[in-house]
Image (cartoon, rainbow, N blue to C red; front, side, top):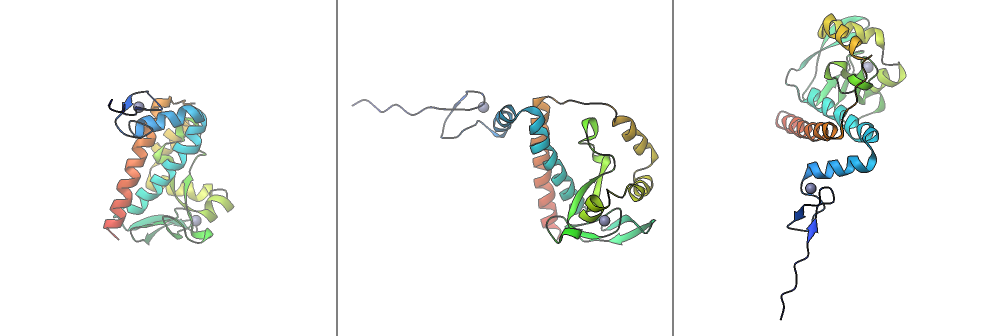
Length: 196
Ligand SMILES: [Zn+2]
Ligand SMILES: [Zn+2]
Protein backbone atom coordinates (compact mmCIF):
# COMPACT_ATOMS: atom_id res chain seq x y z
CA UNK A 1 0.00 0.00 0.00
CA UNK A 2 1.33 3.38 -0.96
CA UNK A 3 2.42 5.54 1.86
CA UNK A 4 0.12 8.49 2.24
CA UNK A 5 1.84 11.63 1.00
CA UNK A 6 2.84 13.92 3.81
CA UNK A 7 0.90 17.13 3.69
CA UNK A 8 3.08 20.05 2.71
CA UNK A 9 2.81 23.35 4.48
CA UNK A 10 4.26 26.53 3.09
CA UNK A 11 4.99 29.89 4.65
CA UNK A 12 2.25 32.40 3.81
CA UNK A 13 4.89 35.08 3.42
CA UNK A 14 7.81 33.59 1.53
CA UNK A 15 6.45 30.25 0.27
CA UNK A 16 9.24 28.28 1.94
CA UNK A 17 8.22 24.72 2.83
CA UNK A 18 7.52 24.21 6.53
CA UNK A 19 7.96 20.97 8.41
CA UNK A 20 4.87 21.32 10.54
CA UNK A 21 1.48 22.96 10.50
CA UNK A 22 2.42 26.58 10.91
CA UNK A 23 1.63 29.66 8.91
CA UNK A 24 5.07 31.23 8.81
CA UNK A 25 8.76 30.32 8.99
CA UNK A 26 9.35 32.68 11.86
CA UNK A 27 8.28 35.96 13.49
CA UNK A 28 9.91 38.00 10.74
CA UNK A 29 7.89 36.31 7.99
CA UNK A 30 4.74 36.80 10.06
CA UNK A 31 5.45 40.51 10.45
CA UNK A 32 6.36 41.05 6.81
CA UNK A 33 3.11 39.40 5.81
CA UNK A 34 1.17 41.54 8.30
CA UNK A 35 2.85 44.68 6.99
CA UNK A 36 2.09 43.75 3.38
CA UNK A 37 -1.56 43.11 4.15
CA UNK A 38 -2.14 46.22 6.30
CA UNK A 39 0.02 48.59 4.26
CA UNK A 40 3.22 50.25 5.46
CA UNK A 41 1.66 53.42 6.87
CA UNK A 42 -1.04 51.64 8.83
CA UNK A 43 1.43 49.03 10.04
CA UNK A 44 3.61 51.84 11.37
CA UNK A 45 0.82 53.68 13.20
CA UNK A 46 -1.19 50.66 14.31
CA UNK A 47 1.49 48.14 15.18
CA UNK A 48 4.91 49.73 15.49
CA UNK A 49 4.19 53.08 17.19
CA UNK A 50 1.98 51.67 20.01
CA UNK A 51 4.57 48.98 20.69
CA UNK A 52 7.31 51.61 20.81
CA UNK A 53 5.31 53.54 23.41
CA UNK A 54 4.58 50.45 25.49
CA UNK A 55 8.24 49.46 25.35
CA UNK A 56 9.32 52.93 26.47
CA UNK A 57 6.90 52.85 29.41
CA UNK A 58 8.17 49.44 30.44
CA UNK A 59 11.82 50.49 30.14
CA UNK A 60 11.26 53.61 32.23
CA UNK A 61 9.42 51.57 34.86
CA UNK A 62 12.15 48.92 34.88
CA UNK A 63 14.85 51.50 35.64
CA UNK A 64 16.66 50.76 38.89
CA UNK A 65 17.28 54.44 39.53
CA UNK A 66 14.44 55.07 41.96
CA UNK A 67 14.86 58.83 42.15
CA UNK A 68 13.10 60.63 39.32
CA UNK A 69 13.10 64.26 38.37
CA UNK A 70 9.80 65.95 37.68
CA UNK A 71 8.54 69.50 37.36
CA UNK A 72 6.17 70.22 40.23
CA UNK A 73 4.64 73.68 40.42
CA UNK A 74 7.25 74.99 38.03
CA UNK A 75 10.31 73.65 39.82
CA UNK A 76 12.47 70.58 39.24
CA UNK A 77 11.80 68.20 42.12
CA UNK A 78 13.20 64.79 43.10
CA UNK A 79 10.54 62.14 43.60
CA UNK A 80 11.04 58.57 44.78
CA UNK A 81 9.45 55.74 42.85
CA UNK A 82 9.51 51.98 42.94
CA UNK A 83 10.49 49.68 40.10
CA UNK A 84 7.29 49.14 38.12
CA UNK A 85 6.27 52.77 38.52
CA UNK A 86 7.06 55.99 36.70
CA UNK A 87 6.85 59.60 37.74
CA UNK A 88 5.01 62.03 35.46
CA UNK A 89 7.69 64.49 34.37
CA UNK A 90 5.28 67.43 34.24
CA UNK A 91 3.44 67.09 37.58
CA UNK A 92 5.17 64.44 39.70
CA UNK A 93 2.27 61.98 39.91
CA UNK A 94 3.49 58.43 40.51
CA UNK A 95 1.92 56.05 38.04
CA UNK A 96 1.98 52.27 37.72
CA UNK A 97 3.55 51.40 34.38
CA UNK A 98 0.28 49.87 33.22
CA UNK A 99 -3.38 50.23 34.23
CA UNK A 100 -4.56 52.23 37.24
CA UNK A 101 -7.06 55.04 37.62
CA UNK A 102 -7.32 57.40 34.67
CA UNK A 103 -5.45 60.33 36.26
CA UNK A 104 -2.60 57.98 37.14
CA UNK A 105 -2.51 56.14 33.87
CA UNK A 106 0.94 56.27 32.41
CA UNK A 107 1.23 57.72 28.94
CA UNK A 108 4.22 58.03 26.69
CA UNK A 109 4.26 61.82 26.43
CA UNK A 110 5.72 63.53 23.37
CA UNK A 111 7.75 66.67 23.85
CA UNK A 112 7.15 67.46 20.20
CA UNK A 113 4.16 65.82 18.51
CA UNK A 114 5.59 62.70 17.02
CA UNK A 115 5.49 62.49 13.29
CA UNK A 116 7.88 61.62 10.52
CA UNK A 117 11.44 61.40 11.66
CA UNK A 118 10.76 61.87 15.38
CA UNK A 119 7.95 59.38 15.77
CA UNK A 120 10.36 56.82 17.21
CA UNK A 121 12.79 59.26 18.77
CA UNK A 122 13.48 58.11 22.33
CA UNK A 123 14.77 61.52 23.41
CA UNK A 124 11.43 63.03 22.43
CA UNK A 125 9.28 61.00 24.82
CA UNK A 126 8.99 60.87 28.60
CA UNK A 127 6.64 59.46 31.23
CA UNK A 128 3.48 61.51 31.65
CA UNK A 129 0.22 60.90 33.46
CA UNK A 130 -2.93 60.81 31.34
CA UNK A 131 -4.12 64.00 33.05
CA UNK A 132 -1.13 66.03 31.85
CA UNK A 133 -0.91 64.35 28.49
CA UNK A 134 -4.58 64.43 27.56
CA UNK A 135 -6.27 67.14 29.62
CA UNK A 136 -3.52 69.71 29.77
CA UNK A 137 -2.23 69.47 26.22
CA UNK A 138 0.97 67.79 27.36
CA UNK A 139 1.92 70.75 29.62
CA UNK A 140 4.50 72.09 27.14
CA UNK A 141 6.00 74.67 29.54
CA UNK A 142 6.72 72.10 32.25
CA UNK A 143 7.89 69.61 29.64
CA UNK A 144 10.42 72.11 28.33
CA UNK A 145 11.75 72.84 31.82
CA UNK A 146 12.18 69.11 32.38
CA UNK A 147 13.81 68.58 28.97
CA UNK A 148 16.29 71.38 29.56
CA UNK A 149 17.19 70.10 33.02
CA UNK A 150 17.37 66.41 32.19
CA UNK A 151 18.22 66.04 28.50
CA UNK A 152 19.80 69.38 27.74
CA UNK A 153 19.33 72.19 25.27
CA UNK A 154 21.35 70.41 22.55
CA UNK A 155 18.86 67.56 22.54
CA UNK A 156 15.96 69.99 22.29
CA UNK A 157 17.61 71.77 19.38
CA UNK A 158 18.33 68.49 17.62
CA UNK A 159 14.67 67.43 17.96
CA UNK A 160 13.41 70.77 16.73
CA UNK A 161 15.48 70.42 13.59
CA UNK A 162 14.53 66.77 13.16
CA UNK A 163 10.80 67.41 13.34
CA UNK A 164 10.90 69.19 9.97
CA UNK A 165 12.56 66.29 8.21
CA UNK A 166 10.11 63.80 6.82
CA UNK A 167 11.33 60.26 7.13
CA UNK A 168 9.68 57.36 5.45
CA UNK A 169 10.61 53.89 6.49
CA UNK A 170 10.68 50.79 4.39
CA UNK A 171 8.69 47.70 5.18
CA UNK A 172 11.82 45.85 6.22
CA UNK A 173 12.89 48.65 8.55
CA UNK A 174 9.49 48.74 10.24
CA UNK A 175 9.43 44.97 10.65
CA UNK A 176 12.93 45.06 12.11
CA UNK A 177 11.85 47.79 14.53
CA UNK A 178 8.79 45.87 15.66
CA UNK A 179 10.82 42.70 16.32
CA UNK A 180 13.42 44.71 18.19
CA UNK A 181 10.83 46.61 20.27
CA UNK A 182 9.22 43.31 21.18
CA UNK A 183 12.51 41.97 22.48
CA UNK A 184 13.21 45.11 24.44
CA UNK A 185 9.70 45.04 25.94
CA UNK A 186 10.20 41.43 27.05
CA UNK A 187 13.56 42.26 28.57
CA UNK A 188 12.11 45.26 30.44
CA UNK A 189 9.23 43.19 31.80
CA UNK A 190 11.66 40.52 33.00
CA UNK A 191 13.85 43.14 34.64
CA UNK A 192 10.82 44.69 36.34
CA UNK A 193 9.68 41.32 37.62
CA UNK A 194 13.13 40.47 38.90
CA UNK A 195 13.44 43.73 40.84
CA UNK A 196 10.03 44.26 42.38
ZN1 LIG B 1 8.74 32.55 5.45
ZN1 LIG C 1 1.10 64.60 35.19
